[in-house]
Image (cartoon, rainbow, N blue to C red):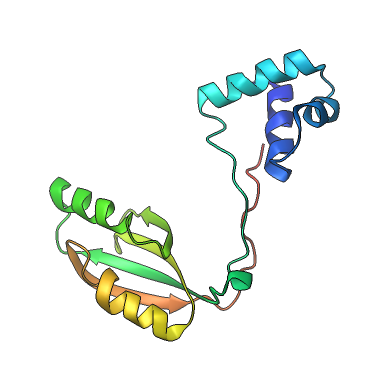
Length: 150
């Protein structure tokens, strides 16, 4: 990956809706070479997809929490069952497996505290292998959806 590839990635991180013509102009390439590089970046896995960034609050998802999950066991089957099940919980917008304790960090959105409480009691606490859940409320997002440093 060279400087031109990084420039293409930087431009797309800022605006994924750029047309190929606009992208080529911004990075100083003609259309064909820019298209080839773009396809190569997609094929290599450097670009994993394109999507719109939505504002949770404007969609009525005004409650955000970080949930720390401690597992009963760390064996392969338990971990796989947990990860498969947590992937089906739509309100979990990010799930990360951690080194040490706790075992997982979940970013969860909900309409309000009551909706979160139902989600916590009925779905999160029922996930396979969960020993303990601990949550904290997000007061304010200071940095989010930051482009990767290229």
